[in-house]
Image (cartoon, rainbow, N blue to C red; front, side, top):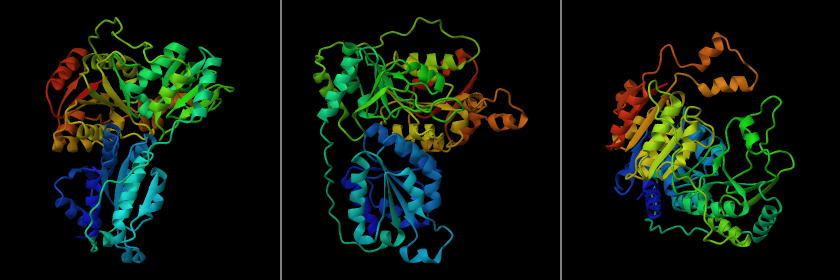
Length: 517
């Protein structure tokens, strides 16, 4: 038995049964070990950003880590953008990064790099395995660190630690510490602030507080105590749809966000942080709440958010039988027809969304109305890229589909963002995943046109336009998808889009709709 076998055994003993991988020479002994472990599902990504993004999507839907396998520093570097998204989503992941044999590092071979330095900014925990005897304790530590509290871990595996002889391992399940007890002082302070400012209190829910059971408790507090419920701008995972409490999403545009929060005197955080502007803009604030707003943390990431909400409800004297307000029926709007628009796509998808679907939204500007409409849709899970790093949508949908093979996954994807990790379509085809990708094909980085105006540039010239638009040549998403093995079709009218949507929803397997808007 070698170190690579031990690493696999520790992962499997702790129910880490999926490895998203793009390996190289330094990882061949680990690849061979995986070959001896049929219980481990190995999923190849053609680019490391697909690998790390898929692990993020998997973790969000299972609340447990998958492993990734990356090749030395450059391979890790290729996956950093979606590791950043995973870290911001508090997604438990275990990144295994192969490295040169320890005695080879002083020779400064071409792939030698500072892996710890690369990993640290996008990881909550980093450790280099010291040798074959260290594989079991290091892997157990990585698993523990990925879940207490949940976050991104990176484990560096030198080649000689992988191929070196190791004593037979008999790993058991790692014992995890329970979450900290609810802070009674924080509960009392929050309750007092809510009583003192009726109608001027907001509450942001995130993480486990954004699941249906916790949202029901938050909704009871909201209804009984006149507290306004919000989500963060970028949502890691929220359970949405008819019969569920529907927080208002804080908008991305800074003027709209500050207007929404302008009359909030007390902002209560449950699992999240105080909302701030994405960027600094000339003459505009960085904080979204007004000066003088009291910001209180009821419970933070890693604490029992459900229990914290229950305790707050009891402290406020709200009965568990308190009814909540939630959406029931769609707004009375005419069915769109004719030329396809962003709004028509949002309406159609929301109305036709199947029960228990998973929506991975990286449509950026194009699908902004979908979130509001999703409150009226069938019950579903809603996921977004959380770190602002684009290229997470296709991989996130891939990982979510592997995590939940019996659920339809719908990826709302911007054409510019999708090109960062288009290789994920190939993985969807190879694994025959039930993912429908809807590409909002506007042939531009629309969000950057808006950002130019936000910084005071109201007219752009040819050089700027060439950096913001995706035409000449226009992207052909149908050909791109088919080249990756995914069936695809194009729609430029509402009627054609509805027909393709109905067809894709009626069957299993990957399908892409290029929605020309």
